[in-house]
Image (cartoon, rainbow, N blue to C red):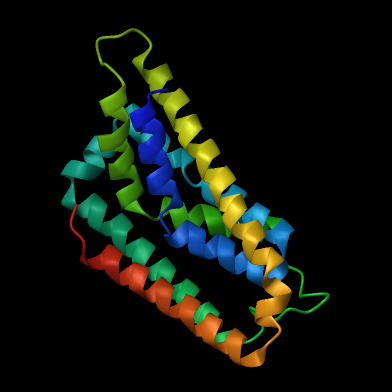
Length: 203
């Protein structure tokens, strides 16, 4: 693995986006375990984009305006849905000793959807991975799988770090009603902003 790939991956993964926001919210609302589950979901959501890049489906998405627009607006709609949930659910960030249970499957599915419905991630893999793989070298596809696995591993580690940190400060932050309200609205606004950025950016 080249240093350039590692550094670029770290920057891309660590930059706050929808996955980081979702993991932070999980850690603040339900603790470390939920944040780890959320991080796993976001990481699994990378798999379809990696497969698309390796099989060439990303090229179709890149050249087909209709395919790209469809996936993009599905992603925008889901982010707005997440924003609405964060805004209206006053219990989202309550630091109760026994918060309302939410199955790990639902947390994982939400995390997967957040990343699946982001066409920019597929385009990123389409443009990013080939730079570190020579087409004329045998096993190029397997090399892309390896690099994709490293990308996913770093995503999991960094997201878990974000989530566990949020869980550690949970009691000190969200036990205050005013702070809770402010954070809930901030999460909602952040999801709206990310949705707007996705809607307005070109391929």
